[in-house]
Length: 332
Image 1 (cartoon, helix red, strand yellow):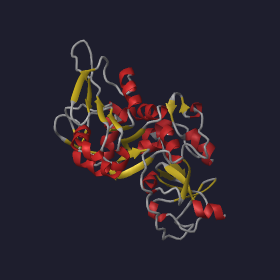
Image 2 (tube, helix red, strand yellow):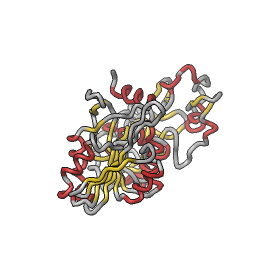
Image 3 (cartoon, rainbow, N blue to C red):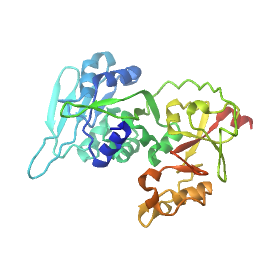
Image 4 (spheres, rainbow, N blue to C red):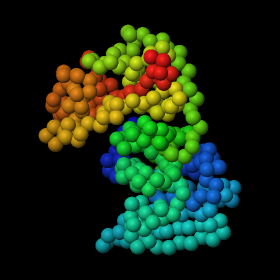
């Protein structure tokens, strides 16, 4: 099965029980050691009995010089079966385990109180609840380092934060997880997202010269299309539409992010133009944004495969980010 399709199926099903491998945690967290010093770390989606996040922080508690480790996890509770939600704490010497009254959801009152106490949140949150999850962290002004579906970086709420450089992509990609049954499951496009300090990405070395035959312009919109990040022309000072993988290479000193194919120049289109007969579609957004009057009205023709695409002539593109070179923009 395609790894990206694997991820989408899991998201649609709300199937979020995937354990992060210890080596992936170690590879990423080793870059932030100084920032963990004297902090209370809260893993708010982690069963202390199986979580490799908890294991990593316990193993490295003294080296990282953290104050305290807290972990809570979600557990289903119904009339047929009751799973216990645990509240775990470790201070470097003593472990304390308590039973939570509620289900341990990250947005429950009990867990929010623990969140308020913590300095940095580190975990692998449920992908299907990403929007709600990131809003909680931002609303309580928390530092965090969490795993994310890369596409979630372009969701409305998180994209605005990414655009303002308030959150950023981390150092590594996560290619594989383990299921509760002990099986390995591979995904595509899974990254770390954080508002901790990250060393700026090296500036891209641009080698391609602008070529109107290769860098096609959008219909009725002054913007060129760039199929690959490596194809960004060094001598073009206008707006460019690039794949979302650009975020992994983004250096705010080299480029500015203007928007994406849904939200542009800070103008987020109202919800009422996202729907036709109650079904989500990009048709109205794209006509307003790009002037593509030839885009079909009937969402059934394209279905979900069309959602997020933009069109140049007869060619459909995946979602694009609108960027501009900072230096060339200033000199324009």
